[in-house]
Image 1 (spheres, rainbow, N blue to C red):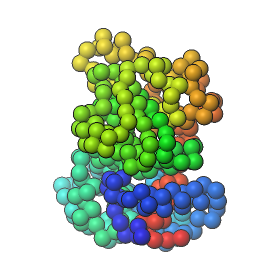
Image 2: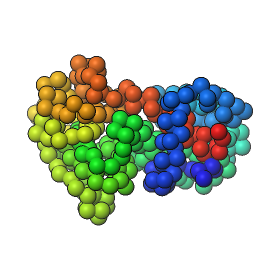
Image 3: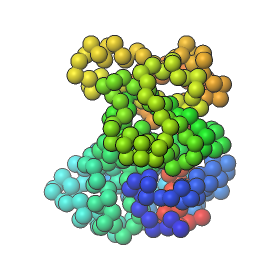
Image 4: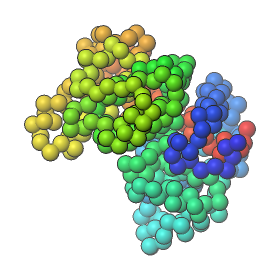
Length: 307
């Protein structure tokens, strides 16, 4: 049972518990009208200590579509944090008013620390560059719906693999499924961190390769997970200019891709996926955004123990 649990890291839940959430999310996708009152009388507290659009609105939409209500703040200056209130006191106060909390914080580890003071389930909605577990659940649900399975897949991760927390979380999550191969596509300056390779890929003896050119490997991929190559991460602007256009996905690069390739992106995008791809049936990134709301609906329902 997931009732009463916190979600701080995707690894907090077993594969079987994740399947419970995904099974319910797929039920909601099929018949959302059956779930419009399951959280009647319940309150979600949203504690966003740093700005967010997509994640905050997704949580709020999820709770409202379940028939519940939302209270909270979208930036700390509108709360008693601006007066110097410490995190444990904020959490204790909000937990006294609400049934479940979604919290985003710029400091890594803050949601886990805060959960120690919460009498209600606390969901990590992002803590700095550390974890973003509900984005990982979104990615996993989208893969499951698109492919009908979580095993026997070749996944290409492209762009900023050094600083991208969504990429690190997805590698960790997908490493728990059988026969998954990773193709890591990035400039040398933005390669997957050594600790991710050592602690996950190498320790579990997973199949992976590192390459610089997307077009060299695109025909092998079942999933392509695009991320932005960030100019601010380069010490040398000439290197950025040399590499930035290598990771713009367009029709030309898709010519050799599989007909059933699934293209994902955690959003927001800048120019790494050409808008000409948006109408391609292989583009799943806007469906992915919507599935983020559905998976949060399922997560909230499971943590509250309602049906």
